[in-house]
Image 1 (cartoon, one colour):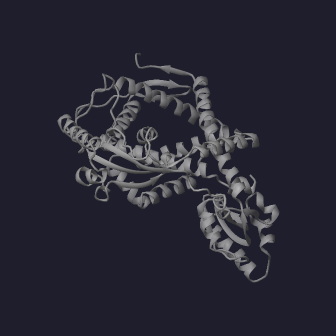
Image 2: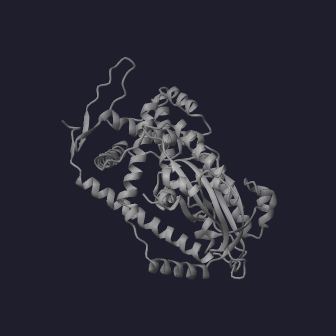
Image 3: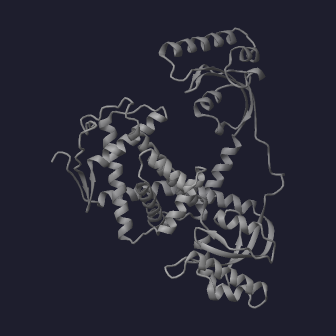
Length: 467
């Protein structure tokens, strides 16, 4: 693996992995809560798995065979309960349970087939990598790992089950990276086309100065309460149409925090407003108001106070970016070398460099365990976001010529030396880099869906629910 492949983890990969891990945590907690809340009313499972009495023994059976693996009825029921619990927590309407069950089972089949493929390809997640991933999840939840474990087990979710769910998520992400992400190509012509389209769209872009009146709907409102609030909003609209002052009406009737400012929201990019607002605002001229618009929070009346072209940034100072030329020595924990031994060895190497007993390059060539070793650990010029935060943050604290202490990242343990820094105008380069990432992400979504269908189509699937 080259130094650039190892160190230049893209933001998209970081975000995808983080999102997958956090979703798994949220899903696990939701599942545990669903199992815990015995006193809450439970929806019928449509005859799929009737709720067991306190003394009844739940008998499991095979629901579907996927290649050489099986999905049991209890696994399906657990996943259905988990989804229902999450939807109710989000205030979403739960679909017919028979339809939901079909969707859940199909998702489980696809997931199981992909996990089997990952194992066939030899994709593995070492326990130490898994431990670090779980530690990051706990940190994001502002908990220690032990506190997170205690909370899960208190809610009925076995921690070992959670660990295996996270292991599977990491395996699937690596499989998708290898099978889909790495094969996506973005040409310079595609970037040119994208940038031209963005420029054309910018010519028609406007910013909007808006004010609003909100007649809020209470949580868990009854149909009668909703009707009363709608009548209030209609009365406000009637008064506005007969010449009432918008700011005064906002201060009198609006439930929004900006009511006492006459409902003033200020200048906004339409792309950052909810589509149901933007669609109505685009029909207006300055000074006009929308009809009453219903959202999940209440009834809105929005006034287009003014609109303008976005500020022309052609004469603005060109974007500048600081880049760092760095090198490192990377050492990893192995079955024959513990974490403590790796740290001690790196500190010994740093002492040799400090005492002029050897140069950084010499020791990197001898000890570094990555593709940069042959180049004396040289990683080239690194921009913000080119490396993982665990590496970038301590690197940014170093002055040219300075060597870090032992730094830990997802790849192992490092000594880092900053060789030099420079600041360049990278506005054009950055513009093309952003365009490349957007195009790559669009292609990735479609390619991932196609690949998932192919994996599903190749899998042997046999339903056993009626047998």
